[in-house]
Length: 160
Image (cartoon, rainbow, N blue to C red; front, side, top):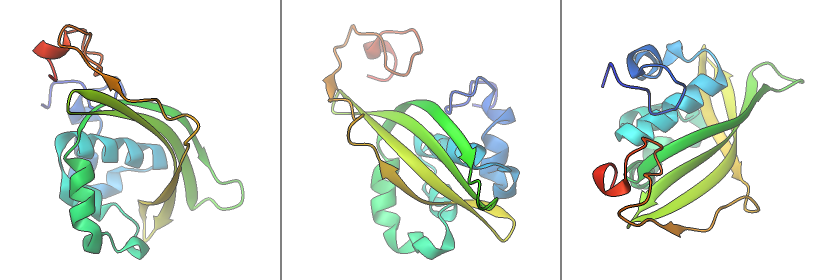
């Protein structure tokens, strides 16, 4: 996958985007880079990385099973809506994003405003709020529809 585009849709190759962060958490020098790397970890089914990038206060190891369920979904698209640092505290950052996944040939979309905390020299995901007003209704994907991952291929020849 090192020569292919990164799953986070940055436009960069995986080897130049999220892979270095997956190898070394400290390479995520902004909340957005950490968020993108966490999305890519979901896409690539890297449960250990997702667990490790939760803030220590979250006790993610005790929630490994639920995290693994989320990671096991077929994630297919990411849009970063906004990214900002807290004006009151430079150790807090926010990233709003919309992500899509496929389950049982149905496309689902979720939108979250995530909060990230800089702790012991690393960015960590702390928590997020979901925007229920922006949730898209599930859409059944037909075999000949364009794939939601935006590869340009038909669903049956790509993610289906």
